[in-house]
Image 1: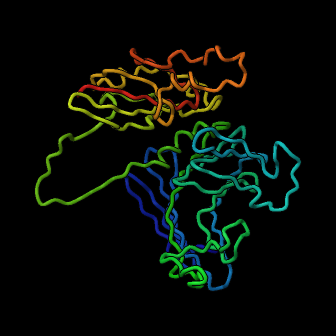
Image 2: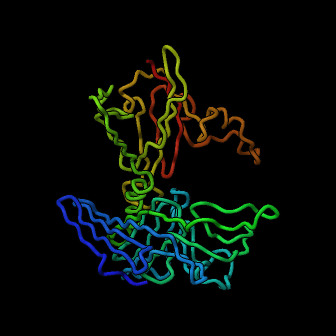
Image 3: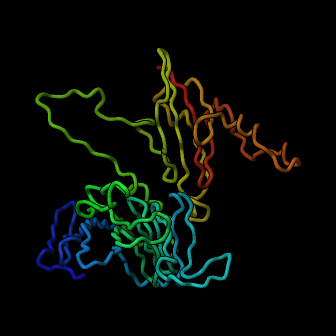
Amino acid sequence: LEPDPSKSLVYKSDLVTEVHSAYKGGWIKQITRIYSGQEHVEVIYTVGPIPIADGLGKEVVTRYKSSIDNKGIFYTDSNAREFMKRKRSFRPTWNMTEFQPVSGNYYPVNAAMYIEDDDMALSIATDRSQGGGSLSDGSMELMVHRRLLVDDSRGVGEALNETDIGMTHYPPYGGAERIGNGLVITGKHRLALSSGRSGARVSRSLMDGAFSEPLVFAASSHQNVVFRAPSFSAIGASLALPKNVMLVTFAQISSSATDRTILMRLGHQYGKGEDDKLSKSVDLDLRFILSGYEIISISEKTLSGNQDLADREELMLHWDESTRNQSTGREDIGSLDDGKITLNSMDIRTFEVKVRI
C-alpha cells in the first residue's frame, strides 16, 4: 500500500495540528494529531471495508518505528494492570522452537505497550484490546483490522470475514454465506516519546485517558434548560486525587428516605519499581475525599462488592494450618470509622459508604 499524496491535508490552529492522509484504494485513512501543550501524539485510523476481490484475506497492522535498541524486549499490560515483560522468540519456562515468527510473537495489548533502552522509551496506548508485538528492534506494531477467507483451524469452523449485514442460515437451512460489505473500523492510538527506562511511567499516564475517554453529548432545545447543578464532582469539588490513584467506581447502589449507599472503588495505578515516587504506597482519608457528604459508616468489601472483606478473610480456606492465625498484614480491614486507608502498588480496594441525605 502506498500513500495517496493528492488526499493529504494539513490543518493548523492554536489548539491542534492535524495531518490527514489516505492510501491508494481509499479504504485506509489516517489522522495524525498534535495538541498544543500535550506530550503525546494521537493517531486516528479508519480501515475498511478490506477488499477481497483478489481472493486473498488481509491483516492490517499499524507499525511504529524508532531508533530504540530494545534487544527484542517489550512490555504489554495485563488487563490494564501490571506490565508483562516479553522477549521476541523466547519463552521463559521452556526451550522454544519457533514455527510462526509473526503470530508467535504477538501478545494481547489491552491498554498499552512500550519499548525502551537507556536513552529513550516509546509508549503506545490503545482505545481497545488489540494484538501487538515488537518483531524487530525499535519497532512496535498493533493489528487494527483483519478480514480472512480461510478458517484458521482454531475451532470456530469458519473464516473471520465479518460483514455489516450478517450471514445466511447455517446448513441445512442455508449455506452460511456472508452478506454485505466488510466492516469499517475507526480507532485511536496515543504515542509518547520519553527519556530512557521511563516506558512504564509514561504508559500509565496515557492509558486510562485513551481507554476511557469522557463521553460528550450535545443536544438542541427550544427553550432554556436550567440544570440542577452546572458541574459535578464525585469527591470534594476543590480536591484532586493523587496522581497514582484512580477513582474506578462511584455508584449509588441503594437509597431510603434518610440515607443512600455508595459503592466506591479506588485503585493504585503503578506497579512496583515503575516510578521512584508514584509506585510508593499512598495514605488516603476517605472522609476527607468525601467531604461533601455526611458519612454514617464506611466498610470495606471484596472486589466484587458482594460481601464484607473481614467476613471473607475469616472464611478463607487455609491449606496450611500453621498460617491460620497469621495476620494478613493489613491493619485497616473491616469497619473504617476513621476513613483512613493505605493503597499499595496495584491495589484496588472496594468500599461501601453510607451517607445521610
